[in-house]
Length: 255
Image 1 (cartoon, rainbow, N blue to C red):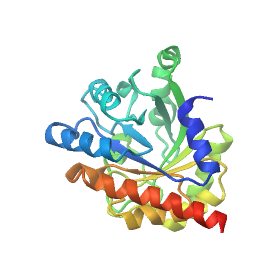
Image 2: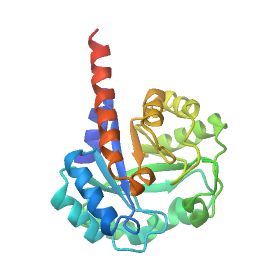
Image 3: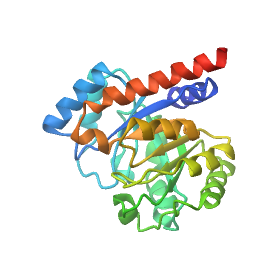
């Protein structure tokens, strides 16, 4: 078992929540990049995800800089096979199970599988579910797939359990970058309660109250990106919130 997935499992077993900061190479440049690196150095999240639904900038240079400056694991979150990099610690091998577009269910995987395997990078098969976030998202447009309605908890659960039975190792509920509303706590709870896999939740999380609500509902990892693009200093607040949540959980467990 490789290091990134093992750490996710160990944290889940200990009931320690994780925060992942998502960086899009097309947006994280210039002063935004400088501010983000400074914030990450002083307040390091559990993971940094790199990628985007329509990233055209090479991810290699960003990952190299992150590995030099920030002491955390770098995980690829690719929009397509062209965003692969051997410089990352791990790759989320995403299959868009909520849609019916074969290209993102298996097509991109076929074009990249042999090359990826030869690199020896840690690959984490991930069932990727798009959830309605209140407005069309870039990934919805690019993948040409419909989202799961935000109030259809049983559809989300059935899709997540299908991912588990297919042998995937993570499930990711995604409301989309800059979503008006994040994945509802009721849906997170429904999926988490019926799933044996670690659960990632992302999209539309702009406040620490929403972050805490996702943790309370059962998310093991929460991904935040868009909120930090305009204000990288928010990273400190979100990292501290996650650490304080961990401390509170440990205290409750000992009482």
